[in-house]
Amino acid sequence: MLYGPMTHPQFLRALAAAGHGSKVLLADANYPHTTGVSARCELVSLNLAPGMLDVLQVLEVLKRTIPIERAEIMTPADGETVDIPIHREFREALPDVEFGELSRFDFYDAARSEEVGIIVATGEQRLYGNLLLTVGVRQPGE
Image (cartoon, rainbow, N blue to C red; front, side, top):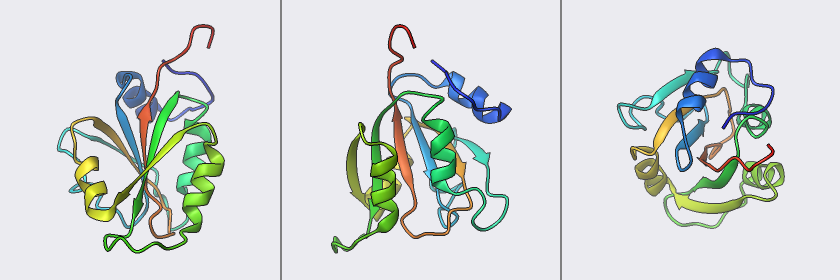
């Protein structure tokens, strides 16, 4: 199911074990990386320093490594509609992917599900910079 330029051995191994319907969480630096996922979820730490590496940098490599079927973003818990610039950037980076929105606590519940097999801790500093991706199906010829 893998294709592309990724070279991180642990991340590649975790992705190779994932299949269609598995989920990957690209988490910002504020996310609870160990308590915000299930106990069996594999943590890939790419948070070298604040701002390094950010979610969009990881996404650029990841989208050339696996097929992405769906993306879900975290929104404020109070249901308030606010402009969150990083969400526009996520949509621009994945123009052909269906997006869903989950309020903060619903997002945490979704991230704790058994389908989330990988959490990537990034150095992303922007609020609501979390992206939950569903692995798609590799098409013939890819």
